[in-house]
Structures are given as structure tokens and as C-alpha cells.
Length: 166
Image 1 (cartoon, rainbow, N blue to C red):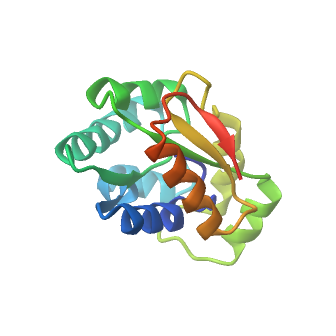
Image 2: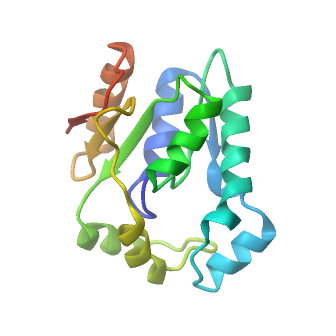
Image 3: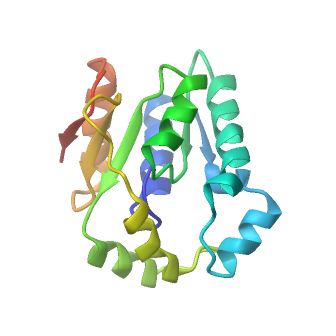
């Protein structure tokens, strides 16, 4: 989960490789209408987002029992709860870092439809992983390799509640 530019795709790809499971970029699951809205700098409403979240949940459910890594924003707790309803074993990685660092990263890349102008609205919407959610909060100032090590450790230790790691 997380805002654009926080490293979700990098972390997700590396994690899937380490775990030997499939990787799915949740951006590819958005409808053409949603993509057009975001490309125009218009944040999606919860109503517009729900079919996409259902598709994310379906991909995760279909990836059982071996598992699958899906990256998506899931910025609000209710979005994660919606997915978790379909996939109770959901383990969430929350890459966290200062908006200045994320903005710097965004300025160095070219996303096909997600404009940098939406970063502030994403931070305004972001509800960090809570202690009762299965997952881990990682600090994006660490290297991807360090993050993957922390995440794999949390998964293999059977992390059932959110905790922080570097």
C-alpha cells in the first residue's frame, strides 16, 4: 500500500522475487475511466475506486494458497478492510517516508498517468497501517534490500499485527 513514489513497485517486485510468487501491479487493474480521471489530475472518489478494489481482492484471492504480491495504494483503512474481507490472510507492507523525499523521487520518474499534483491529496488521504492490521511499516529511507529483509522476516515470523521496521 502507499502513496505514489513511495517505492511500492520496487518493493513489490523484489518481494515477489524473494518469495517466489507472482507480482501484479494494481495500477494495471484500474478501468480506463479511472486512468483517464487520474491522468487529468482528478482524485478518484470512493465509489469510483470500489470496483478496482474488488479486482485487487480477486487477484489476491486467486493467488492462494501459494501467494501473490499485489501493489496498490489502499490508502484508507476501509479499503484495506474491504480487501481483507475477501482475503483474511492479507499481509500489508506500508512504505512510509517524508513527502519531500517522495516528491523528489516522483520528479525523477515519468508515470504513465499519475501526475505529481496528486501527491498532496494522497498524503491527505493516507491512513497509515494500524496496530491491529497484519503487516509492517517500513521506512523508505532504507535500501530496498534492507526493506525486503525486514518484510520477509516479518512474514516468516507470522506477523499478525502491524509493526515498524527499517
